[in-house]
Image (cartoon, rainbow, N blue to C red; front, side, top):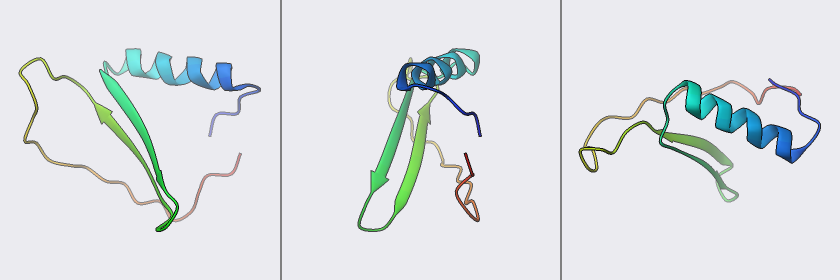
Length: 65
């Protein structure tokens, strides 16, 4: 896990990774009722909305900071 000292630094890291991996959009989601925490990364919508698949990585526990 990357440690940051401010929200601005965290934002810079997210934007740099988006650029490095050529993401068009990254969404961070949290559902309190279920405890779900998710990140959705969209690579390219040039040809319109996709009907592609989903890859999921379940983690045994939240990373320690």
